[in-house]
Length: 88
Image 1 (tube, helix red, strand yellow):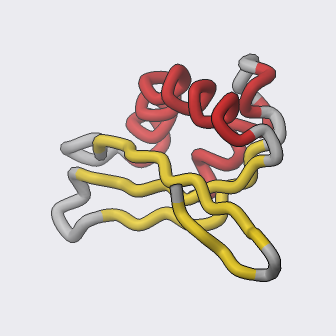
Image 2 (cartoon, helix red, strand yellow):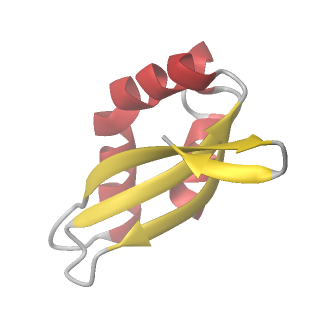
């Protein structure tokens, strides 16, 4: 989670993801799939920005973790409405 959050905060140049907060990362036992839960006030624009940055983020994960397989990344937007959280 730290690698993704720091990369977005310090290295990503896409303005659509500047207001993204990484909330949680879930990785399968075989390390092949990672779900990244995030929130952003920019909604669908942030989602498009993250989709665009997917390859860049996978490259950073590969460089920092040095594992055999780099997980496929899925982004899950989490929104708060009236004190309740929902996933999109």
